[in-house]
Every structure is written in C-alpha cells, then in structure tokens.
Image 1: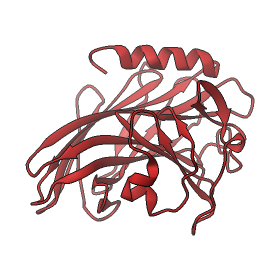
Image 2 (image 1 turned 90 degrees about the vertical axis):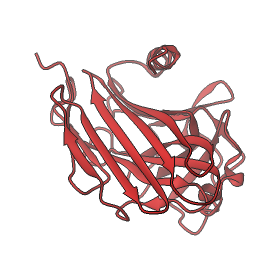
Image 3 (image 1 turned 120 degrees about the vertical axis):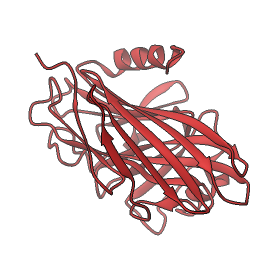
Image 4 (image 1 turned 180 degrees about the horizontal axis):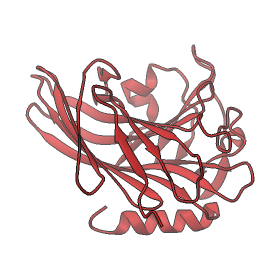
Length: 253
C-alpha cells in the first residue's frame, strides 16, 4: 500500500503537483506555493521569479527562489499518507523594513470534480467559534467580484494589510486561518491551513482556496519561518478540526 502522496515540483515555476493520494483515486491538485511572497505592500508575484526545485530521496521536494535586492526564500514540501507540509523560510534582502510579510498560498482544487466548488456551498471556515459555509458569511463585491478575502484570528485586520486592502473585498469577518472543502458526497475533505496565518482568500472563478502565511515585520536582512499544511482525509469537519489543532500543537509544527 502506498504510504505517501506523490509530489512533483515544477521546474522554474512556483508550484508543486500532488497526485496518487490514498483514498482520492484519480485526484490531482496543485499547490501554487507561493503564488506571491515577500513584503505585503509590494510582494513578488507568481512568475516574477524562477525557483529551482530539487527532489529529495525521501520523496520531499526542496525549492529556492530569489529576487536580487528584494528577497530570497526556501520551501520544503514533504508528504505523508493524507497531509502535505510546506515549510517556508523568507529573508528580506531589500533596504527597507517590511511592516508585514507573507506567503500567499494557492490550493487549486478545480481539477477534481468531487471538490470543485465554484458556488462555495461546500467550502467551510470557522468564525466566532462556529463552523460556517462561505455562502453564509457576508460578502463584499470589489472590482473582481469572484474574489473574497477574510481577516484571521491573531493577525491584523485585513483592511490594514496592503495586499488584502487592494482587492477592496474584505467584510468585517474574522475566521480561523484555514479553509476546507467537503466532497460532493460529504465523505471526504480537503483543507489548507497556515501558521502563523495572515488572511484567507477564495476565488469562485477558479475554485481555489488560500490560507496565506504571515511572517510579521521583517527588517533588512531578517528572516522568519511559516508552515502550511494541506489535508486529504476521510473525516467529518469537526473530527478533522480536532486533529488539525493537535497537529499544530506539536513542537515540530
């Protein structure tokens, strides 16, 4: 029996493909990790740098990328039977302090019909101590009406984060730093969660969900670490949530 999800870093691209997922026959998902990274006021976007990917003997993939005079980062993506862990190390190479820094992590689910959810009827968060579908939350229609962002617990309000504020689509909602999608039959679940979490982002057009990681303030030359976990489980939302909390309570997480 296969014990690990298969990873495939994409040479020169800020992305990693996930396949051969136990219990998810034919499933194929993509991590746009990171879709943007660096200073939350002026991040480096997907495609603006060409990272190097290296396969490790244990099935993990290591990526590193840099933009001269701006930033460097490394990313280690490792897998188990039902979870992928992505560890980011970000360094400020610029001459200016970054008030807030981020890794904007895109979890693309549109390739799997069982999880594709353009209407957000099976996409869940937890706000005010209650599990809620995205369709139950207030929505703000900005210039890109398919896009919605949410503030997360323990982070600055979204409207105070330049990256978030620029979308003009942040309601007065605060959630935990994760998003999950239930399969159409309700028996399986995929989820993305970052610690420290900075904000959530959902795009109805592409059926992708994002849990952005926050690195806090970074002065010139300073580095910080953040972690994202992506889950593929057969469990109820409540059972997965309990497990996720335990995972992040461990020192290694």
